[in-house]
Every structure is written in C-alpha cells, then in structure tokens.
Length: 311
Image 1 (tube, one colour):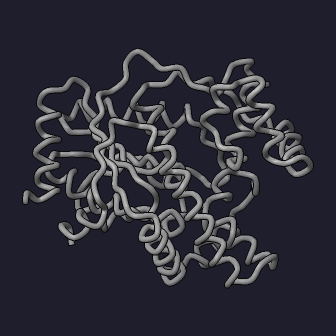
Image 2 (image 1 turned 180 degrees about the vertical axis):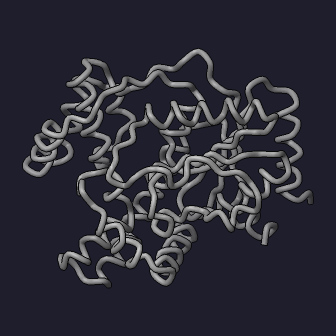
C-alpha cells in the first residue's frame, strides 16, 4: 500500500504544475494534527504557511491557541501569527486584506501559499475572494444586543438575523453569539448583509482535511488541554490580564482564556475551569466539522494514519 503523505505530496505537486493561482488548504478541527502535516507538506513543495486561526493572530496567547513557536517551525516561513495586541479588534475583512497581500508576495517569490487552520470563514473568504462589507465596531449596539441575548436568549437574536439576512442566518449557529451579534451589527450599520459576496478572482484550492473518530478526537482535545496547563496556560493568562484594557475584545473570549480569567477572578475553581475548557473545545470542534463537511472538495485523510507516518 502506498504511503499516504508521499502520495499526497505527489498529487499536490501535479496540481501546482497545472493550475493558475494555486493555494494549498489544510484544515480540520482543533487538535487534529494539522501542524505536523503542514510542515511536512511545506518542506516538500516550498510552501509558506498562513495561519487561518482567528485567535493565533494575537500576541501573548501562544499556549492557549497552540500556536507554533519560531523555534519549532523547521525553517518554514509562517505568517499571521502573534502580530495583534489582544485589546484590538480585527475583522474578517481586515484578515482577508492582509492575507491576500501576503499571498501575492509569496507568489512573487515563486513559493507556494498554504492556508492552515480551523477558522472556516477565514479560509472561505480567501479561497472565494469574498467581498466583505467593512464596518467599524459599534460598542453601544453590541451592548444592546448582548443585553437582548441575556434577557431573551440566543434564539431571539437568531430569529432577528433570519428576518433581515436569511442567508447569514443559515451559516451562523444560534449558539455562536459573537458572530450573531456581529452579523446584526453589520446589517444595522451598513444596511448590507454580513453574508459575503463571492469575488471574481478566487484562488484554485487543493483542500486537505484531517479526520478522526469523534471520541478519539475528544480524547486528543482533553489531553492537549492538560498539556496546556502543564506548559503554563494559567501564567500566560495572568500576564494577559495585566494588559487588558478592553475586556470585551474578541481575544479574551478565546477558548482557555475566558475560562482561566473566570478562575482568576474567583468565579469558578481551577478544576471547573479545566473541565469547561475541555467541554467548550469539544463543542467547538464539533461546530468546525459541521462547517467543513459542507465543502465537498476536501480530500479527507484519516488522522491516525497520517500521524503514524509522520511520527
């Protein structure tokens, strides 16, 4: 039987040689093993990796986001890692603008752009070149919508979104409060929908996905959370807390960060924080897979088989 990774790289090279504006996309749920495979592929094809993780953009959150440190990058150039102050806001349109410029620069240097991560909307915005309405944050409106959520629940907000932007409502789960509120905000502020329109200059993408049986993936997530605590997750969040000027910034709602902040503020115990991080990460992985399953172009690989080859 042919080895999975060498055969995969052979197929990627054929794709690159016969495609205009190619981009390699490696996706999958959190803790699925994307990092190790991405390094193997990049080393074989002259790839440069662009993070498609909405939280790895922020500084000082390397443990919580499991971002690859420079010393572990094996000489492969990485982009969109740890360049933002955690107190700042960074929209989907901001990400797309910066990432596209990076991709153009990679092409100029005759290298191969690789999108690697688990934020499906970021990947789709790049590959399909979405035209995304730009809208500055309206904090008063956000507070109002957040209060509505607290009083009437998530289904109330989802119903409001469905009435004014049914397409966005189809793609945003009612439990994803932050995206619900942002979609409503953009509609109210710009009179445009959050639903992006497909642009004219999308990239030709070679999609690779890593898949695991759900229970095995959940075990991997639980193990990784335990390792994050051993690596110093609590101390990392303590340092972040010293610099918080905007507790409502998206960075501080990240998995691991929000639960540890609640622990440090005395709202929950360390044990409760640990179990919450595991539970919330498992739920997030489930939502990621629901999103990815919509894409019929993904070549799914068994994570266990790939990991066995790379170890």
